[in-house]
Image (tube, rainbow, N blue to C red; front, top):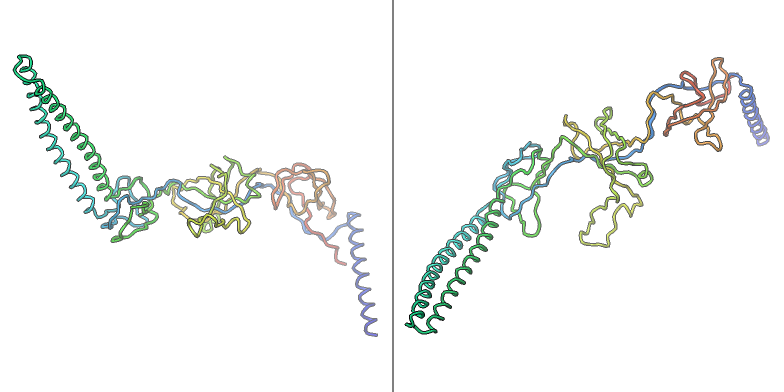
Length: 387
């Protein structure tokens, strides 16, 4: 008995639901007043954009490295310091380089002394050769003595030229040694802010195989946003298109810019194994491919800092003071890309179906070009009226 009663109640509930749905449809078709949720057609800015995430980096910066090996004696700056071009930053122990320069100068002085001595021998050889030629004209000497004097003259001249070549070579080496001695004092190559320091006083630098970085100087008055665009949206990004972004800490302020460059290849992360060429990028492992789009923004007030995260919007189309309706309230018309139907709530409380022509649209709203005016109310949800 209980099971049969339960079945009768279930059938009755289904019949009631069907009757209610049929009644609502009948009222809808007749345009009778219904309990609806609606929003007005209002004017505003509608834009179609591509969203991405980016990282802020200084547009102009330089990594300052050491060109000579040695111990850091003095480090004159710290992160955050503002420096001028040509300002002394780091002093490296110059004792080895200074000794090399002193040895080069001593060697150069010795070669010059040898050259002076050989020049004197060359002058003597010229005099002896002239004397032998005069005596040979008078028939007072032998031909072999004249030839010996001529050979001695040529040999003395060759030794002078050899010493001059050695002096030139030593001078070039000395210039290189003096330059390396100058590298023990590192000066700022540009004006800007010290954003990082990778060395400490007392640390020994080894510049034999590669240049060790000591610090980085950046001009923070202009920043570049390195934004990652999805593979699905990269074709929509064009050079020169407007773009804006907000930061995580300042969501109410927008920074404006224009796309400067779209890199033609996705970034390749550094391999964990260094020289292991068989290691695959992490992007390939995760099947996510992104491309890098660059644009610059002014940072005169210093609000933007390196490594900040930016929420970027690349603007494809934008219409200001446009009539907008919720995109969820529109139903596409078959065979048309810009025609949609919408339910409009009339002043008498009845609902009518209209056909609208739309323009720019995004995920939330669409621009109305025809079919509705400001103030019209678009139905977004409808319910059967309460009994």
